[in-house]
Each structure stands twice: as structure tokens, then as C-alpha cells.
Image 1 (tube, helix red, strand yellow):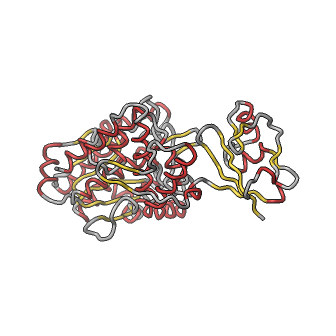
Image 2: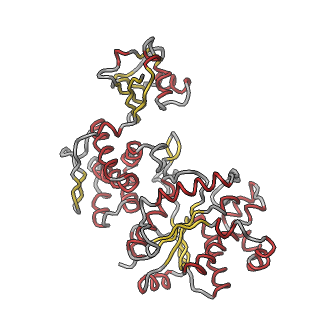
Image 3: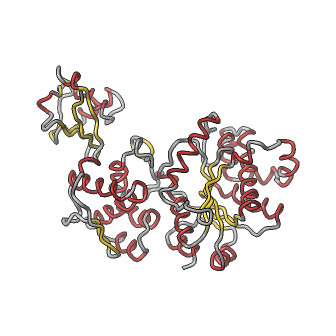
Length: 427
């Protein structure tokens, strides 16, 4: 299939500048395309995964990836989709974040050679720009009236938009021009809130180079209830295993709403669409099997097969398997899951023996385990009946945890139905 048809079938496309011409180009030759990521943090989160998966499909169809890390644009801040200005980071923070993002994208994309993919940082060409020359050579091609009409700008004008952020569109457009000039880039992909910036880049590149280039956007990823996808009560779901463990990552996918399963399988797994449709249309309770497949496949891509196996077995051991055979199975393949080391996947917390010896408050333990952010939140959890110690409900917020609670040197602590920690005693 043509790569554009694959993206369209799986639901990745929202807007395209010239779909017919782009489809023809993708069918005739390898096309170089890019997606930009601003390094405002040290980890990607699930909200970044939609463009990463689109990049993965394009690369699998033989097209060339440029992953652009915005070490230069991060110093300005993209106003798109934001209600207020981003915090200004130091150069050292931006550069460290950029390196971390490069490593994470390598999980999904093949960077083994320049013919397959490139990682570039726009700090290379943006930080050394002469402002007067840039205004003269680039700024003259932009209409302020058109910039003000962009949705990302209009939304921010009501809350206040700095002149610094107003320049962002010029810089992103300039990125496309440089990538076309230096690397033959034909296509820019981005979220639907990037449409104005992408169209500006297409227009600038055509003006300066006379080149036929294209832009496409991906849909905003919302849950069936209209809420933003990738957020939990405790915050974002990260790809960094130190911030969201593989077990917690697996559990996020395993617990998605039934109505979202079909779309998420199409976006975040490499399963063929016939299989996606079969799994996504299973009725309850059989759809729980589909969620196991989704969670396993998504965790495999982000953290590798060993982490996915351990998370699958740990979650199934805690809450039961949808498949009694205990396998991650689809009609296209069967992944046998060895039943060793599953317990390692459950997040483990070590508490000092000196704290346990006199009796450790269960309120304090909930905070130490990261299941509550404060003593007050821990008490409310207990009073609401949501705290379980070794699967027994804790009714008294004054209860003390002692060595007697640690059978074979560990205990199980749970907040609600799914959020569990393994607690061990340290030296």
C-alpha cells in the first residue's frame, strides 16, 4: 500500500496540503520527511507517541525520517495549544533534554544509517542567526495579518502573547526551508495545532527554493469522553522508565476505556488492520483480551519484549488474565510468555528497617511508596476505603505497619483497584 493510504486507514491524517500530489510522490520514490520535538522536558510522554508511530509507518514503507529536536526553538517556546508561555530553560537544560529524547526515539525508529533516518538539532542553524539578516531575508515573506489569523495565535491573543512567541512561526518555517535545502526534505508532519506553522513552512520553502513540498497534520488525540489522552490522576504517562515504570505503563494501556480500544490499536501497535478491527470490535467482556494485546504491544515498543512480558505476567498475576492460557496471542502471531521474574515488574519500594521496627504509620508508608502525595491525601484514601495492605482493607488511618506484616520480607500495598507497590525492608 501507499504510505499515505496506510496512515489514512489507521486514522493518522487530519489535514494535508495536497493529498493527491503527496500520494503520488510517496508512490514514486523515497520521500524524506520530518517531525519536530521541542526538548522542554527530559522524556517523551504518550502525547508524543502519535507522530512517532506515524514516522515509524512511513519509515517502514521505505521513506526517510528526520527527527528534529528543537534545541533552538525551545528558547522561544511554541504558543500552539498553550494557554500561557512556557518556562524559559537554560541552554544546558535544553541540550541535556535533547540528548534524552534522541535516545527514546531510537526505540521506535531505525537510526542505523543516514539513509534510514537522521537526528538533527535546529540549534545548529538557529542559535547563530543574525537577527537583522533574518528579518530581511525571511521575515519579509510573512504577512502579519495571516499570522494573526492562525488559530494558535488567535487563542493566545486573548490571554496574552509575547513578541518572543510570535516569532515561533517564522523559526519553524525556517526549519523546513533548511531541511529541504540541506537534506532534501519533502514533507513536514505535526499535530493539528501545528497547521498554521506547517503551512507557513511549505509556503516559505516554495518561495525561497521553488520546491514542491508538503505538510500534513495528525488529529488531536482525545479519549471517547472528550478528555485529553495520556493524562492520569497522577499526571502524564512517560516513556522514561524512571518516571513511569514499564508495569505502570502497561497498566495504563490495559485500563483504557472500551470505546477507545479500536482506535488505540490502530495508532499504537504494528498489528495489521484486519487484526485491529477484529480485536477492537470484540464486545465486553471479551474486549479485555484486546486490552491485554494493546498493553503488551505498546509496552513492547516502548520498553522491549522482556519488560512487556514481565508487566503482562505481573498484571495478570495480580488481577487475572483475560486469556486463561496466559499468552499474548493474536491471529497473526503468538508470543509465548515465560513465567519467570514477573514480580520484578511491580514497582518496588524499600523502607529502612529502623522505621519499621517501632511501627511505621500506614499513612507514612503510603507517602513513601508514592501512592499518596501527602499525609492528608493518604488519610483521605484510607477513610474512603481505598487502601489495602496485603489485600486486606485498611480502615484505621492510625494503623502501624510492623515486621509481622512483611511475610517473606515483603508486603503488598495498594491504592484503589490497580495502583500497587511491593514494599521490602532495607538495611
